[in-house]
Image (cartoon, rainbow, N blue to C red):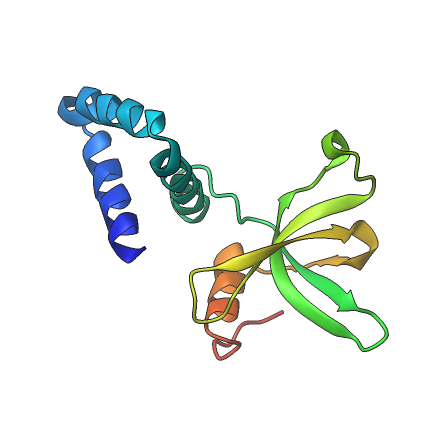
Length: 138
């Protein structure tokens, strides 16, 4: 997994230069035609672009109430603010990263269970990935 991420990042760097751009586009077209490789490549490309690049997608940190009666909450990021296209009214998609890991869960949550956090997405991600060790001001 780490090797694939490094290769994709390296190919992205090479692809950003003008001389290599056409070669990168050709290689990407070949990769996209390979069934299983296409799924892995496109998924990793999306995840990496969500963290870095011009179009960061983890920009809305929120607190999600998982169990209101026991006051259990998790920090996550809204990835889709409107799910009407899949017939979920008043619900949002929230990505919950795991601590000390490069993985997470996607939850579909009622809007009533969301509290927007007044912190940067970078601070929220550091706090989650560190397992709550990093100090931030909420």
